[in-house]
Amino acid sequence: MVRGLFRLQLGRFAEAVPDLERALELGGSPGAPLPDVGLVLLARAYRQTGDPQRALDVIAAYRDTNANARGLDQEAGIAHFELARACVGDKDLAGALEHLRTSYALEPQEGNATFAAEAAAQLGLIDEAFTWIERAHAHGLRGVARLRSPGFEPLHADPRWQAWLDRLGN
Image (cartoon, one colour):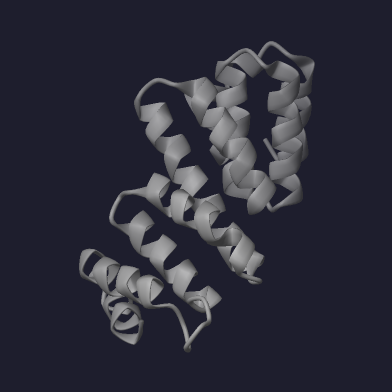
């Protein structure tokens, strides 16, 4: 596991994967599962090599045997965020929004909330989009720069839009 950690730290993610997979296969100390940090590192290595779904698969497979759900939740939240970006690239906004909902539930941040607001707006889910903007604000959204994206245009006709621009310092 140590070699995998060092390779991750050096940015050699693809080389870290086999080391961390082998550590998972061998487990921790005799008769014990791989330490929680090993699972987190393996999930991170999968994500960094462009395979967030594989990161989610390993997290799901080992979640019940590991106590550090927080570290696993962070990795899963980031993996769902990355899958949402892939869905947007594939023009699957509904799929993106589902991943963003899960990402936010696991790792609530301004970034996934703002991204979810934009996806909801583009899907015509206006009330949900404003709920996401409220969540983004609660997690640090300041200023209107992020809301200037063309993806928010479906909200412009709603009176809440101008109220938000004013609130954020239009």
